[in-house]
Length: 178
Ligand code: AR6
Image 1 (cartoon, helix red, strand yellow):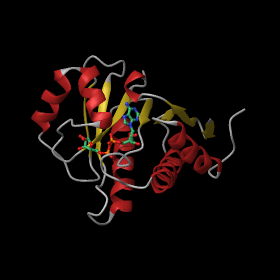
Image 2 (tube, protein in one colour; image 1 turned 135 degrees about the horizontal axis):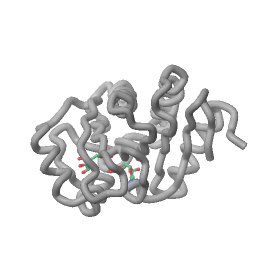
Image 3 (cartoon, helix red, strand yellow; image 1 turned 45 degrees about the vertical axis):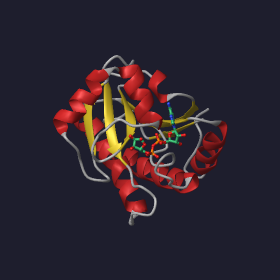
Image 4 (cartoon, helix red, strand yellow; image 1 turned 30 degrees about the horizontal axis):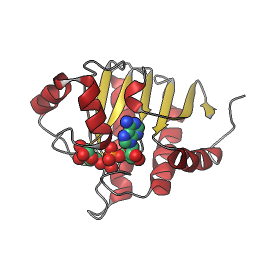
């Protein structure tokens, strides 16, 4: 499913984010930038040790923040490491919004045209999927109304159920592309 916003588009797909060849894929990171399980584990396995080495040099960032490394051996040239909230730590909605927004801004600052997000915080960090879809899609829609840089934002959902939640939410957001 796709929707168009000015010159840009939001696209939903189901699959493994580490297979995508967007300019950047987003890692669901922790603030210490240690690549653990879930999306991060898949990135570590497929992208090689270089990505963790670059993360170690950066050292860490705040919850809601985003930093960028190369994509190592991945098809994507860059990985944006976005730190989502862990459920229960407080102010989770704002932190997820900031993690999304800071990733989009960083991609634009680096002149990237396409980026792919996973459903940040909805795995190990325990954030509810429907709320994630609401926040990440609303933040992205609002951002794309203003930017002239980023052309394509993909949400890559791991399973059918997650895809269905994002699809339902995106249908509320705007006209679908033919
Ligand atoms: N492609 C797309 N989505 C995926 C993939 C994949 N290859 N693998 C999992 N998902 P998670 P978090 C989905 O746990 O909750 C790690 O240890 C998954 O089904 O990756 O933000 C990090 O190092 C879920 O819907 O991220 C951090 O410490 C979503 O991606 C911590 O977990 C996010 O799940 C971050 O936890």
